[in-house]
Structures are given as structure tokens and as C-alpha cells.
Length: 300
Length: 300
Image (cartoon, rainbow over all chains, first blue to last red; front, side, top):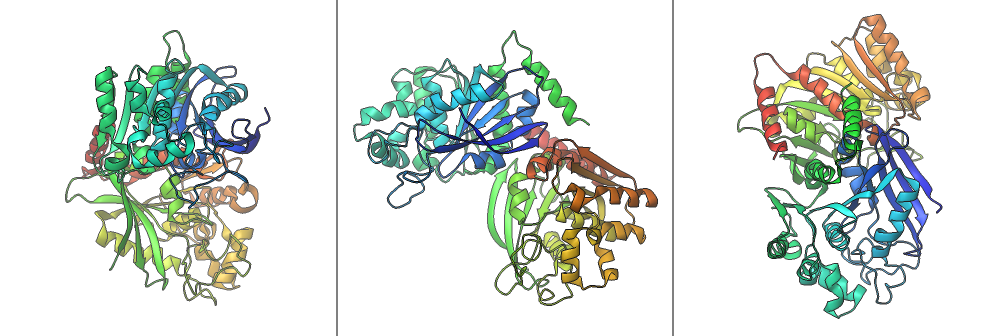
């Protein structure tokens, strides 16, 4: 698997890298970022996946997410993929809208033309990119967790619910919890998956839970001043589904916060700690070791 | 003083704002950002000035600087101005180079045409913007400190050395310490200030120290893998000047770090703690109060 290094920078003791590769899943070049904390030779570290929202690339969270300090302290690899295929020949929204097409892959494998050729983000995120991460980075693939924001929160919830054994923790910032029931999803899902709503259910967190999918618990932060809250995000639908399914959901409404990275960065540390607790195994010392390394580095 | 609010977002319990105003100093509209932590009504908070480097606007540090967590914890207002005048009629480098003209004001009042009309960043940063901050924000102007990066490190050092009573702390990330002696400065200073090198000395930290300027101490972090280290930054010149003048300089070479915000964000917390220690007065309770507010908010 040929991986081109776009850039690397030392940060918080580790390495923040950006990489490009030819994706078999999407038939395009794909770019993603990986942060690897400082670690002892031979040690493999847990992997946190972060899926981004509409209009984003890997760069938004990489630059604005403020995750490196905690990942360094807790010993977590942080992987941030792109949100859609890009490049020549990749279909876009006919009017170039922000909420469909480029930057808006919704983490599905499209079945409808003209999107089926390249919009295969489900396969890319759940199969192809994990294989690359396992091969190219010091990643303990038995210890993965997933989080995301907005459309990426939708991706984190649906992928986490589909692979509960793979992901030890699932959380989201201001996620789209029920795309089948809101305008963003009701535009994207038929265009990618066709008009039969039955095909949408495995890409809708609330529907997945209604259909029997389970995770051990969920953490969701939601800004109360998020302009998309009432029409597009509707966390109350997730609350109802989790209650009916007895999934423990920690849903925190944060007064005054909007939909931006100023909101995400504020609560990123809480999410990473929550993930780290669920990624820590009884028999392993990576957590304490990594934690010690971080402490030493931060207190010069 | 009419101030237009471009945007505000809640972050780490406080408010990150971006503001625009018609500047009398530069004769242009100017944009700057201010972070104000959560604080009790009527309380005035110390002010940390952050001056940015070549090519930057207020946005770079605002998005990538990772300063809000510590400013919230320590109760510090954080002000990030632009790096030059901008807009119609503002002269630029004739070839549009990144290191002179737009985005590269070098924190001087230009005396040379065609720059003298608008490139008055010294007056803007030291007089006009402080008056706006004092009027529009809950700022304790008896408690100010200054830091900066690269060209902004140059600005922080020269302004801090010129107003040692105003700024209780001065620090820099990878600063240009002696512009008179390096290519970036030897291009910009004659074009802004004329060919007489005597006019450059009050805009050169090393020359200022040689000429008698003093501060109580300095903190400088410098990446050892910074591509500009040997030719443009030359921290050894500051080290020599501080040694000769008995100014205590903490100069930390950080192995593996480059010139980017991945470097700055790593050490931002150290700098803010260093500033907060020097901004704290014996008789005041703002430090402990703010610290307590931050702790409560961060441990939900």
C-alpha cells in the first residue's frame, strides 16, 4: 500500500502527519491525517477515529480540534479522514450545494448514478483505511473507538452501532442522529441510496437502534445555540431510541455553544478521556505508561 | 469608537469574538480577535497581546493557537491583531512576496513612500487598539503582557522592550530577534524606514537591548527543526545581548519542532502560565477566582 507523506510536524511530543493514497474503494486519491503520540519502540497504541462534518476535510479537526494534548497524555492515535471522494470525474451536487456531493459523502456506499462510482465512504472508512492504519502506524487495532461531528457524528454513530465489537467507545458532537427524518438526510440518502427508505435504515442511527443495534453506552455533546439543532440534529430522537433500547446515553446540552470548532474543541478533552477509559484494558500498561510520558513532557 | 462584531462563539466557557473597526492609525478597516473568559460581573481581567507572524491575520492563532483552555483557567483576555493594513489603496510588495507588504507590517510606522500612508502598525498596536480594548472589553489595562510568533515575536520583543512598565511579561515563539541582521529585516526595514540603519535600531530587539532597553525577564521557545532558524531567527544573537545586559532569558530549543502552529500550540500553555505568574498581583484575587471558575467548568 503506497502512502505518500504530505507533511509531518512534531506536536505535543508526537507527530501530526497528513498522508495521501490511491483509494481502491473510492477510485480517487484520498487524504487523511494521523496523530501518533510519543511512545516507546514497539508499543502499539489505541486508535480514535474522528469523522468530520459537512464541507470539511481532514484539515478542519487537525488544525482546530485541540485533540493532540490529550491524545499525547492518554496515548491515543487520532485518525481524521476526508468526508467524500474528490477530484476529476467525481460527481457533485448539481448546484454545488454544501450539504451534498463533495464534502458530504454521508459515510455510505452510494448505489445510485452518478454517485455509485466514487462515493464509497462506508467501505473506505470501515475497510480500506483501517487496513492502511494497521499496516502503516503503531496501531492496536483491537482497541479502536470512534467519534464525529454533525454529519461525521452520524457516521460515528452508524459505524459504531454496526461494529460494536470493533469500537470500544462511540461519541459525537452535535450529530445528525436520524438522517431519514431531517432535510439534510432526506436530500442525501435518496440521491446516494435510492428512494426506498428501507435502504436508508442502516445509515440512520435511530433506525439502527430501533432495528436492534446496540452499543454499551454513548456520549453526545450538543450546543444549545447550534443553529441546526431543531431542524437537522434532533437529539431528542436519539434520546427516545436509546431509552426504548436501554442504551445508556449521556446527552449534554451545552448552553450558549454553537456548531463550530469553538464548541468541539471545548469538549474534546472530555470525549477523549471518556474514550480512553473504555479503551483501557485491565491487563495493559499502555494507558499508565502513556499517561506518565505525557506528564513528564508537559511539566518541564 | 464604533466596533463591528464580525462573529462571536462560546468556547471554553468564555466568548471568542472577531471585530472590525475603521482605524485612524492605518486609515483602513482593521480586524482583530479577542477571547474573554467567563468572569464575574464587574471584574476586569489581565490582557495578553499576541502578535502574529508573516502571512498571518488574527485568524491563524485564533483557530490554531490552543490558547482558550488556559486563558479560561487563568482568567486572561487574549487579543490577536492583524499583521498589516489591508484593503484598497494599501501598497504591497511589488512582486507580492509573502515577507513584505500585506501580512508583513513588521510592527513599525513606515516613513517611506508608498508605505507611510497606511503601514502604521506601531501606533495601531501600541496606542489605538489598546484604547479600543480598554473601552470595549472588561480589561485591566494595568495588567498587560505581550507575546508573538516569528515576525510577531519581533513585534512582542520590541514593543515589550519599549514599554517595560506596561507589559508585565514578554515572551516569544521563534522570534526574529535582530531584523537588522537577517534577510527578512534587511528587506523590510529599509523599505518601511529608509536606508539609515540608525532608524532601524528601535525596531530590532537586539539593538534595543544594546542601546539600554531592559525587561525583567524573557521566555523564548525555538524549534530546532525550524527551517528559518539559522538564516532568519538567530536566537543566539538575543542570547548574547541578554547575557551582556544581564536580562534573564529562558531560551528553550525544542528538538524536532518546526515553525508552525503545531509547535506554537504545544508550548502555548507554558507561555500563558508564565505570563499569568507575572500578571498576578499580591493584593488581587482575580487569579484565584478565575482559576476556580475554570476548574469548576472543566470538571463536569
